[in-house]
Image 1 (tube, one colour):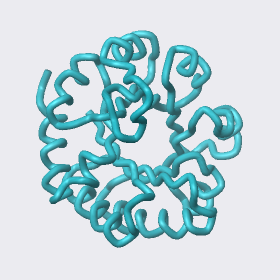
Image 2: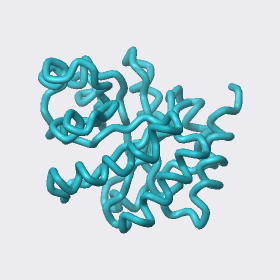
Image 3: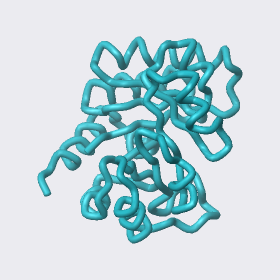
Image 4: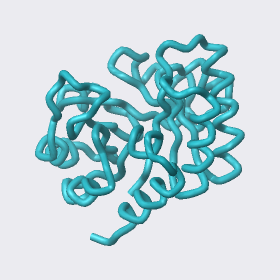
Length: 200
């Protein structure tokens, strides 16, 4: 199973980059750089720093929403939301980029035809969306069953919930607080990695 770490703009850059370095050294597969309030230049600078840390360790980097920054920086992929450019447009502009699509229901999954993976959530309760009810494991399993591409679960994922997410058929998980809020992000990443690598 894949492990995606999504950055959080609430963390100052030095702390964030230290966590990115620790995660990159302990089993994360993708870093998704996300900051909806940053200027293009600010996002470019942050992504440059993340790539410098992650890529030598074999970790891929995606930019959330901003296809222009992903292209300018030479990122590995882009994560598109429901208000991003359409997948077919991005595919024409940047056929070499891996494209993820964030979805919340079957209608969103249908609109995401052509993506390389779906990110579905939020599966469990999460501080990122305190007023929205979680979609739950049954909804995750239904999405997995109805699409032919990998589904990454997001939202309130912890080490303890990975087993249930695996049983629902997800191909991986995306986390924020499980790594970034941990006292030791490297150890937290290694624990998640170990749980993801369990058979069955």
